[in-house]
Amino acid sequence: MTNSIPSVKDMRDFWPRPATHDGINLTDLLSEIKAFALDTFDMIDVDQNGFLSATELEYAYQHRDLDRRQKNYVRFLLKNVDRIALAHDDHDDHDGPNHAGISRNDIVGISRSDLVHYFARM
Image (cartoon, rainbow, N blue to C red):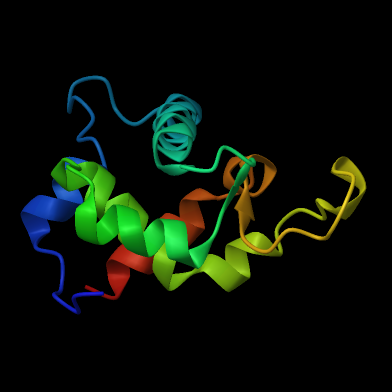
């Protein structure tokens, strides 16, 4: 994975700028981010098993034609794959072996503070 640091423009492309006259509606913002996250999840889950492995994330980051926002999101997932994968116990949700990686349920659990923490490291 390339270790380039995202630019401020990358951050702004990922985190939508709310209209200044409307203020910030946190609920709407988180809903929009989660919808984007799940759409991107479906696009990069190449084996369609409902989990994103580090291998799938690395492949998406290196080889998929992602826009800047999607690339930043994949970078976020890749850097935090172990932590995010623990957000929801998916063992009871699936028959067969315990899947390693990030599930759709894990994505729904990503909070605003997780995203702010990620971008604060830029």
